[in-house]
Amino acid sequence: MVTWCEKMEQIGPAPEQLIGQLLSGDRQSGRMAVRRLTAEYGTLANAVNDVLWPALLGIESIASGEGISVFQHHYALSTLRGMIEQASSGFSRRMARGKTVMIVSGPDVGNECAGEMLATLLEADGYQVFFTRGIASSDEVVAEMARLSPDAVIVFSASAEDLPWIRSLTSRLNDWPNSSRPSVIVGGGIFARVPGLAQEIGVDTVADDPVAVGNLLPTAISESSCQSGVVGRLDGKLRSSVGHDTPKAA
Image (cartoon, rainbow, N blue to C red; front, side, top):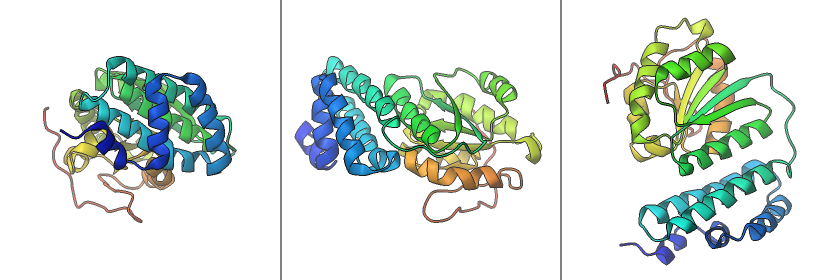
């Protein structure tokens, strides 16, 4: 079994130091860490990419191996969420883009923390963001899409239990006209753990972390009205698939 120390060696010094503070439950040290991030990293995207996102992945990896207590796990995630909110006000924000994004994460607190990180990052980048977690059916998502008319729907840090409604959603959206169909993006969670899953269910685009989603989002939105069945990954360009598999029951 990989030890806590061995996992930390794989993460890097800045996230490793932050994880130690988060696991202690010391919320004041978390607030002090945000001030250092603001001074050292320049942009929220840099802070997320280099420290906050690796720290979250490290916490979840350690927790999955039962290397920490339930108290430490919840301390860390609660403090990290507070840091994300605090950091959003410490960096400059882009002017409004006039684009609306709907984000849905998986059901547990780790999923929610990942979704919150993405939502905060996209808000700072000028998007109007609506975020929730723990959706039970595609009916709920479609109804909210009808209300919001989002330019993109992002399913981020989903769990295996979310796959039935995600498959149903992508199947239903195939019947929508291109002119009114939002871009659908997935990333993190089960999609990071199972290569090829996004292609299997016919999702528009896939990115593995919050910064990658933010970088890919403008292109995904601009192309959503003229392409269907496109699957891309952030590696310098979008890769278009010839087709996609028929959605399967989970």
